[in-house]
Length: 126
Image (cartoon, rainbow, N blue to C red; front, side, top):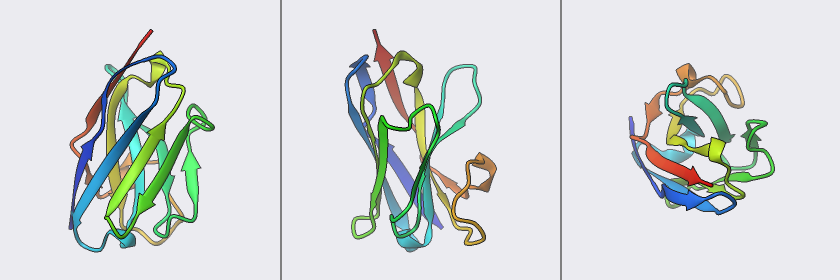
């Protein structure tokens, strides 16, 4: 089992940047594919980005590609999401998640993730 704690959200202006962090404790962090999801009011939780266990491969939703960067530090058991050029539509609660499966490289489906952080609010105002 692994426990995840999200942090780093806040209120920013459109065009600003933020760095979210997700600190893990428990089982070996490097055994999990890590993902970031977000949920805006009245909408379903959607995939944002994922990173392989080694950190060598990253995957992004089309809506954030080129603006967001996911990374991980396995020595610190932490995954990051650097968000640049933020837009109004990026406003949401952001959750990190851990997927223990080794059957595929990564998943965009929230149902495939085993553990979740509590979420951190990102609000972008114009």
